Amino acid sequence: MNKFKLYFSLFCSVFILFSCNKADSLTAVPVRAFDVQYAEDIAIIEDYLDTHYLNYENEEVTISKITNPTDQRSMMSYLNSETYPKLLVKEVESNDITYKIYYFKLRADYETGITPSKADSVLASYNGTYLSYKTETVNEVLITTLLATQFEYTPFPTEFLRLDTAVRGWREILPLFKAGQKIDVPGEPTSYADFGAGILFIPSGLGYFNVPQPGIPSYSPLVFSFKLYDVKYTDQDQDGILSNDEDLNGDGDFTNDDTDGDGVQNLYDVDDDGDSYLTKNEIKIDGVVPSSYDQILDCSGTTTGLKKHLDPTCN
Image (cartoon, rainbow, N blue to C red; front, side, top):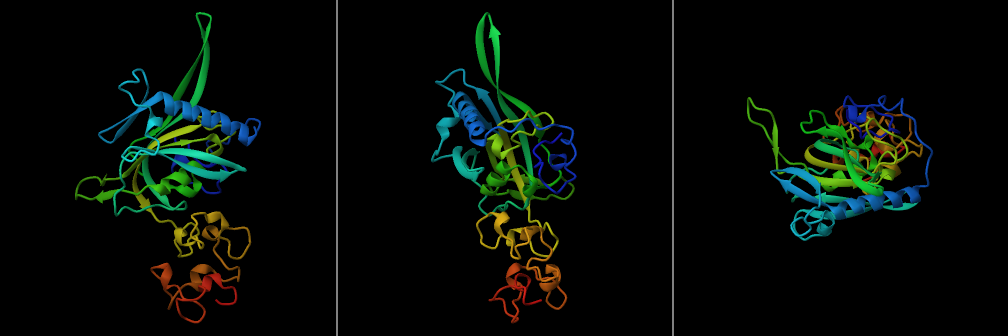
């Protein structure tokens, strides 16, 4: 079963990854302070990076515990490497905390590949694990072991996954990668080359936090290795404007683009300027929706002013 759905989402996909009913029977545990939990999460993530090594061979990822430090280089040692693989960090503000998301870029992106926005859909294979400590007594000695437990493995994806309904860690990191080169051969399945490949390490505050998922306990830091094969530009509200064009200020954050101030972000709003005329009708030229955002007209009939669907005085 797929697991990394955003449980606050209003949207469902046929992919179980984004299903809205699987976790309904699971009960959230009491809420901990975000800063306290983050301190625990980042400690176990960094412990994992310090004590495990990475093997990336034939486009496949394996992560194992270091048993020979001389020959097995820790994942943390790749931090800000000048060559691939590179361990990088993105800082994300949430819950009055500056979260660090560690992520690997395993190789260079395909130069002309498509980059998804946080509102687009991706075709990606992935392997998901969660991190935890197990403490047990062995021969009267207390031993603590760091475990990475697999909860999902999707090597052959068949459906595009919407990033706007994924956990925030995915929304923040996947747009830093590019899709690969699509290869279509008649009579054969579609394949991809030079796809983006990475690993991300998500603190629980940017994952599921206190809400357990099938196979994932509450407050679990998550680790995903993934391959980004393809990107599909999405139009969530079916208003004729691609969602990545609804990010009016270009900051990559779709939550602060609400032209009419009605509490519904533009990418979900069928009437962006609140003038009671549907956006999809306002943008039409001779009854046809323009093929690109730049072609949408302003009230004077040019493309240089405020677009009609954003101007409540014009329809």
